[in-house]
Length: 116
Figure 1 (cartoon, rainbow, N blue to C red):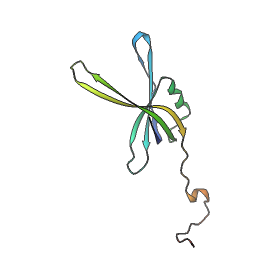
Figure 2 (cartoon, one colour):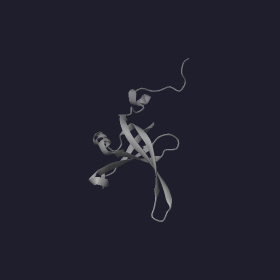
Figure 3 (tube, one colour):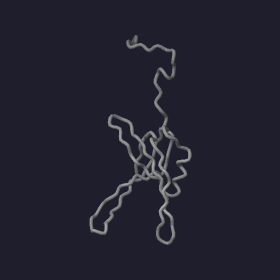
Figure 4 (tube, rainbow, N blue to C red):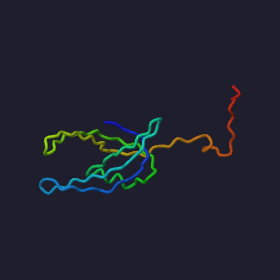
């Protein structure tokens, strides 16, 4: 549904919930930070079989995450209704970091005025 380039800030512990008929539901969340003029910190969830994608990630990695936007309605015992939104990751690609001229050629001087 969408994708975003982010930097990994925190990888949270795996959570396991018991469901109906003894089925387990597994989720692991990752806290990430977007770039740009207005960076945002987001929690992105990895569900069930997608949790294994976290094995090769570490804090500080810059990745492109593809996600599905999920929402659900919940009514508490008092009759109050709440809505929850989840970003569920389904694909991760290592992002190429931008390389500056000084990184490419550390001893090279750059000129402000070009001859053309």
